[in-house]
Amino acid sequence: MTDLYPLRLPPSFRERIWGAYDLAPVFGRQEKKIGEVWYSFDENVIANGPLQGQSLSELIQRHGPALMGAAHDGSSFPILAKLLFTSDRLSVQVHPKDDYAQAHEGSPGKTEMWHVLAAEPGAGVALGLTKTLSQDELRHAAESGEIENDLNWVEVHPGQTIFVPAGTLHAIGPGLVLCEIQQNSDVTYRFYDFARLDGDGKPRELHIDKAVEVTEQKPHPGPIAPFRFPGGDYARELLIACPYFAAERWVWEQSISYPRHPDHADLLIFLRGEGRIGDDPYAPGDAYWVPAGLEGLTLTPSSPSEVIVSHVPDLDVVRAELAAVGAGDAHPMVLP
Image (cartoon, rainbow, N blue to C red):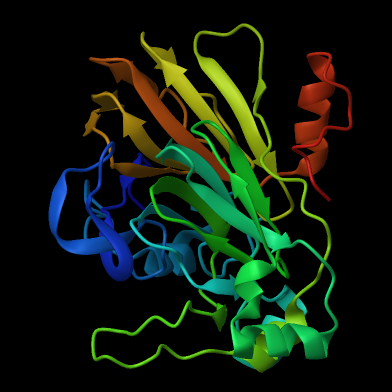
């Protein structure tokens, strides 16, 4: 196998009826309404170096532990990372947990998080309901449209993070740019769609029965503020950590040595600034997969830079690192 290096993942632009033409602050204006930009899906192909043209799934099948870390089981890429751009409300939806998704869809479930990159004044997300409904009441609320009055809408602001565990009924409002980190699954049960029609003038498919079965009506804590690690050569914030993924935000203005992680690979989405990751250039909207254990890597900015870094964590390691800087071994951003 060739020597490992940062692997560039090109963005995949996905048209959505609720998407936007203007993809600032990450990309420029588009000809179509783009709602999602995908990076780490199994079919995406490496865009640089000797492994150029090979898909993520091909590389993992051939070289899984060397790329992903010894604990990786050799199956698909564990994290799906996206950028979301909204000009309208997304549907009210819910994602199943692993057991239900495997039994009914042959797929992992979908726990996710959103980090708010930009928000118009008053923009928000719906997180659960304002009151508890029985399954029959929940089904009736979807069929009648009364669910619109029961959604728990929360205003959000840039820099906040929202954790959305599987089973949470939710929606995303217009005027938002989000970085979404999630389990590598696209299983979504659309519960209600605001009487919206698709491009052919037809209502989009709903999945009310399955949505009712998997919805868990627990109070949602709302957005979480990041934890800023003290010291260091760059600003480092922990956004969230759960069994499926951990995400951090880094900001730097001078060259920094990339920390070596022998146990896991990292997925980087650059949001601001230009420079080089090793020998490769980066700019806003670029993404790189940094293989596990890579040594001697340097991030060299030509302008102040910002990146979201995600990986599959060992939560004991995360808790120990927080405890070492006086944050205690229990923290609201580290979730069981």
